[in-house]
Amino acid sequence: MFAFRDSREGDVSRLRVDVAFTDSSLDLQGLRDDFPQVLARLEDELGVPLARASQVHGDEVLVVDAPIPLGHAPTADALVTRTRGLGLMVRVADCVPLVLADVEAGVVGAVHSGRPGMVLDIATRAVEVMREQGASEIAAWLGPHVCGACYEVPEQMRAEVSAVVPEAYAETSWGTPSVDVGAGVRAQLERAGVEVVEVGGCTREDQGLHSYRRDGSAAGRFAGLVWVS
Ligand SMILES: [Zn+2]
Image (cartoon, rainbow, N blue to C red; front, side):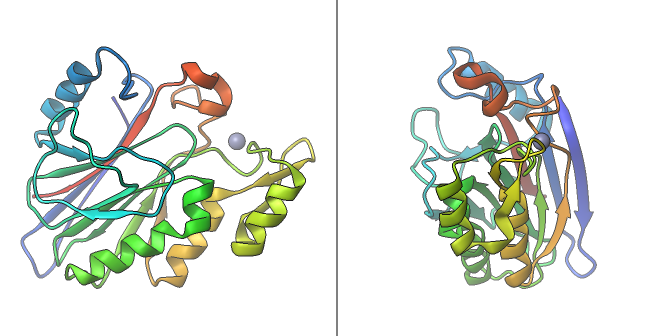
């Protein structure tokens, strides 16, 4: 069920933060008929209820303090909480799933940053909202996403994106223009003073992960998850 799991305990606080990324054995595409059952199965496995958003490639960061009922997901691309026992979920298939935590302060965040989110710098915006909520030393787990060697884009798009985020300038393994969203988001986090842990490989190349570039409209979604207990 999981491609990656990690947990950290605070030195000063008695808090623990859990981080997980699911694999392709779960399909969390919200439009599927069985989404409620899949979500319930995941919540059972984790032992926490989940808050999630309806993601739109924007830069809205929402502070939440309760699980979100089915059918009521608010529009946002990042969630932040300081509520213990509430899991945050971000769903992706190639975009960067990012989870953030300050283990001492007990503040966590989950961010959906694809190419548009990176251009809008939603990662830094989420870090700012976490700091408003009391976070100071923030660590980030940058989850599996399509790599720069696979994410082909038109030449003009690469020029526009790299004018805003120079670190995202890349070339595919077959020599055409591409964008490296992971490198761009990593640079944004480092500029914001956040420690970055890179998790997993390229979604397009790894069959164990969902990929829109590989599977098109049939692609499933996997999740980045974080919670404090
Ligand atoms: Zn790749």
